[in-house]
Length: 375
Image 1 (tube, rainbow, N blue to C red):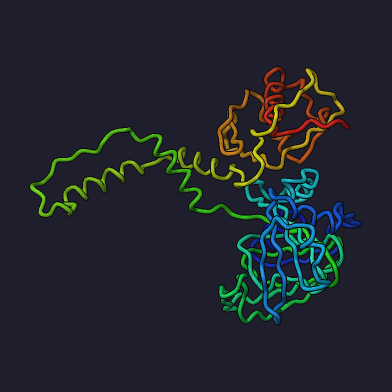
Image 2: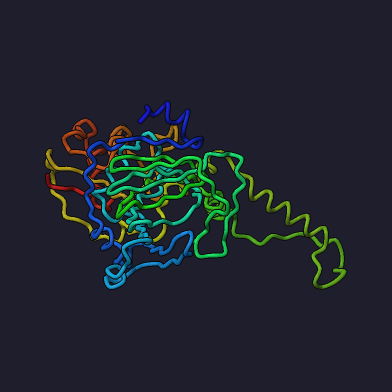
């Protein structure tokens, strides 16, 4: 894989990139049956797609039962399981390989298994994705033509592309990885039973940023009734007169006046809020912690935990949508904790941060944003 500067400059959101042996000697930690087992869980989002371009498609949403999965035909099916990194934290470490991209762009690790010929049809995604071949082989057809006028066909259960004409045909083996920028037309087809990991990176949604900003502005608005002097008797009891309309418009304009600080706050809240439907750390029982953390113990980050740091802000950080105080001098500690999926206690050198650093770390552990593991 090219270095981070080259990748961002030449490929990110510009063109696809096939990386042979990106994960050399990749040893897939999950079997096909184990992935299928995740789709039995009501708390895990999953989908089953049956069919082909010629025969047509059907879509089912999980959770599924064992009878359904055990009776799948030998070909033309795909089972997709979302947010596997959140439900199996030990797999979140694969995201460390993409640390050159910011956490606020991370969507999830989706795992798909498919029988021979299994596919979801020709389509395009609204997010950037790295497709890691974990088991078996999958053929990827892509269309690099930037002028291709492909239309979405929304008549069936899947949003597929009409007139897809691939320019590239690539067969991926275990450990190979294909990067696809958002919007690039592509079609993946299983070559025998296979397993593919999709590491998705998604940009923020404008409506979510606006929703956070409006929440902030509403809190700041005075709890008072707007008053104005009527320009005269109502011409009709159902009519809003021009003077009152102009007055109310101006009141809204004044309320929407904001500052860079408020905009930053809205952005940070939105980008650090976990996806809905995921396990909430606050719902977990408070763990028993030793008074002194063993030096050889490992701290595992809860993959639902989303941390965001604003430029120049060293007295606070955003955690799962809320601003949290940051003790003086503890910014390097927080950066080290958030730099990877797990870290050994001895690597943190807690002594340099004193009681403030210890309080910060124990607070994160008690709230289940990090877990203490025995080595």
